[in-house]
Length: 160
Image 1 (tube, rainbow, N blue to C red):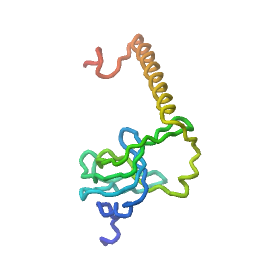
Image 2 (image 1 turned 180 degrees about the vertical axis):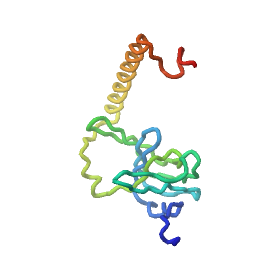
Image 3 (image 1 turned 180 degrees about the horizontal axis):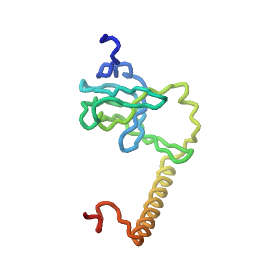
Image 4 (image 1 turned 90 degrees about the vertical axis):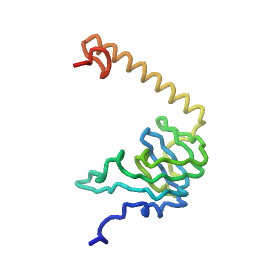
């Protein structure tokens, strides 16, 4: 009966050692690098599929003992619309509690990326401009809603 239980401990990471992986962090950053090492405190959530929808069973991430791991030749991939740039990081130690997704990169399909690679400085400027525009739009929206009697959480007028 135990043979049917999926392997969700740190041993399941053995297959990824010395392979190129994509890591998505909780803050939205996407890291690409060679998976070199991990510690013994891994607990991977077990994914199950029901009706085509991915459901994750396991302990809540903030209570799980998650594996910390080391990425070599690591880059942070920045995206803006149909463009991307890679920011060199080098060697990076990633805390497992910050990982949303971790997967092996298909080296053949990697060359068929439908995005155009651009200069890092160029894409950082575009992302920065978009973030500033988003902040201005949010401030205008907040102002209009405030005049209509709505307030954001935690601001003046939000008390019970």
